[in-house]
Structures are given as structure tokens and as C-alpha cells.
Image (cartoon, rainbow, N blue to C red; front, top):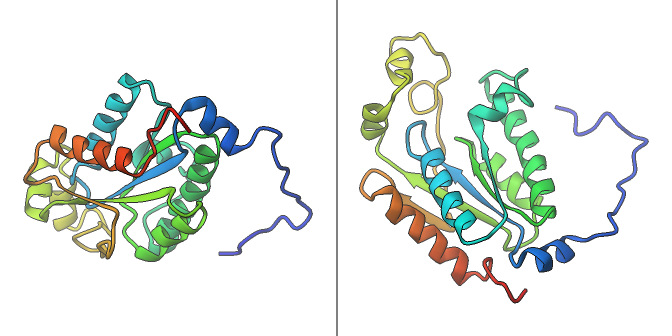
Length: 205
């Protein structure tokens, strides 16, 4: 797809910087980029982490893949081209949200490494945390409340990740959570601990 169709635009820098917002919020503007198969627990863990951070007084926002497809990306399907465009748009959205000083928790399957790496490149070094929700596909199918895996295996849903469309596992994610073995609370605690270690949650910024 074309990179841009707007040749007469100029980026306008805001008077209030990302650093200014980070100082006000006492946190770094970063993204936790949850990736994994459908049913691997991305949204569940992302919301659990957000609840913990919100209780601690931090400023957050969860971007859920299904929710975004209801509006911003409702014109896209699930072909490889559309999946890439879906993540490209979401990456730009994440960039804006982190620039606003928020801790963004994005829960997208985002099956292709290249798309995830392009998202990483939009952010400052150290502001992108890839969270791999590692879960065996058999467990994902057991959890499947919408019956998507059954429909995919029956050929009713074409290009379904893990069945008829590939998923490229992260090679060097910042965080790995074993969602088929560990409880949601344990996964959330591991992520919170990592954010503390990396200085994201810091009232003295």
C-alpha cells in the first residue's frame, strides 16, 4: 500500500511535550504490545494489568483488536494485506497515545513479525514492550467462547490465524507469559514487576 497520499502536510509539534506529560503523570508513555493466538488471553491479561495500574493511580488505555475493528478499521478484512494495514493503523494510534504519556495495553493477534517490528520502530527505544501470550492451540480452542476455531476447521472462516493462516511467534519478546499454565493474576503481576524494573512506573520522573 502507498505510504502516503498527502504530500502537502507538515507535522506540527505540540507546545506540551511527551516528557512534560510523563512528569505530570509520574510514568513513562509506553506500550505493552500483547500478541498471541485467538483465545490466548491477550485481552483478559491486558485488562487485568490495566485494573492494577488504574488502582495504583497510573494513566492507561486498553486498545482491543475487536473493538477497533468495530470502528476505525471496520473497512478491513482478514487477508494478509488487510491484516498488515490493520496493524499499521493501530501502530500509529499507539504512537499518538504513548506521546500523550499513557501506558497503552494493545491486545491484537498481530500475527506477522514484520508488522510488530514496524510498530516498534515508531516508538522511542525502550518504550515498546512485546508481551507474548504463550498458549498451546489446543487450550485456545478449549477456551473459545465464540466457537471460532470450530468454524475455522469447518472452513466457515477463511484465513483464521493458527488454522488456515500463519502466526509468527516473537523471537525476542520483552515479556513472555504462559497463559495456559499460569493464572491471570500471576501473569499480570509478572508484567507489573517488569514495568517497575524498567522504570516505567516512577513518580519521580
